[in-house]
Length: 192
Image (cartoon, rainbow, N blue to C red; front, side):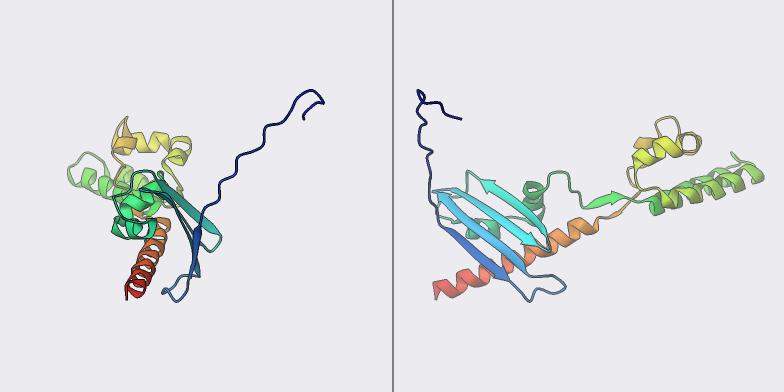
């Protein structure tokens, strides 16, 4: 809070032009809102919103002579998702896949004679509990001993393939495809 002796410097305010698009009619998607902002030559920002979720990306080094909409259309979906959400992966942990892998491991151990009939049956049954596991972290807390028995002391490295397609990734992919299609369509209409 300024005092009588201190003067406050005025805030600097820049005005820019933002283009807003509302995309409807994309199969199995709610309306998508897109904000495009060309900030300067080779610099732009895009914000995409759908069903209460938003994703934003800024590029400070776009290819020459492309605006943000044109640039966005040239990028691959995986690259864009990496900008929107670095932690999102096309695949995610699956308790179902882990249970299947664990039970297959038990069956292989039984066939090779490494496990007796009763021990194999017990492990096979216990592996069924993995189906309800939401994450690797949960396994550390709830099933670490069983995991070590089935997959060894560093079992978390051997379960990397216990995954399934990530529906959030697929959803965002569909949104990006719809935005790219709409932007391309709009660019063709303005070129005519």
